[in-house]
Image (cartoon, rainbow, N blue to C red; front, side, top):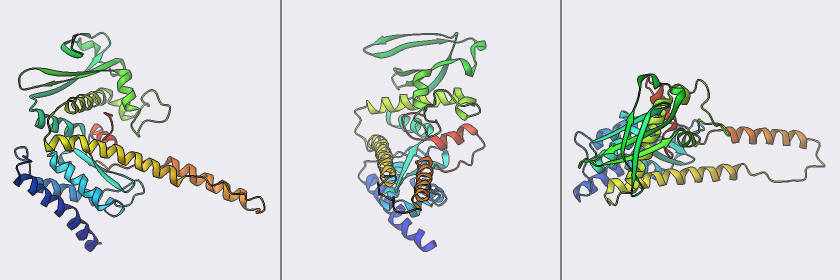
Length: 315
């Protein structure tokens, strides 16, 4: 096993390290202060050795070397470190992806835009919220809140404000219905579910989950609207595309593996049992989650949820 790991490391980590050095030598990549790509990849390699796919197989064995290398490159170019909960490695079929946490999304946004602040807050029933629309953008948002209004069962929305160097601000505002629609795309959300399940992280930490969702939405929309052609922004956008493609490929493969072939088994007395077993296998196969995130070692339930639901359009 140690020899196999050494080969995978040589074909992934070492190649990525060389690629990053090339970017630096050409002046295409500058890292944030105190960021060490070498340390980030060491942390990632340790995490990858214990990360499993949905079938509980080590991702270093089940995923392609190209996808492992690409996930590492996405992580490093964006200046992120999984040891700081800035992202997670998640497998979709044979494709490994690096998915930013909202901490990671905020870090990259600040790095690319030089934003001074990224702040989010929740709006409750009884709060006074006013704003203006200018050229289709929300401006001059004012939020007055009474302490007695704070109640997780009375959230009606949330907003995020990205404050830029010149003092101008980019604001994203979401209603609770929009937030729940984003949550419904999470694998933690059951089919047909419209409300948070009692005792779930969505229900217990509704305020933090709402902030997380609107922060992700604000940062992604602002970054996607940018005309910056930097290597960092390119990987920021491309990594999300790769995740979506990996999800689609895995889903297609899932349906392909589950295709039922109609065969006339009438002459055989054992057909009903075989059909019953096949249907049970199909049921179990469909109930299996698409991908499995690495387990979090944090004692913070919100951080554990972040690990389990990272990625996608702003869960």
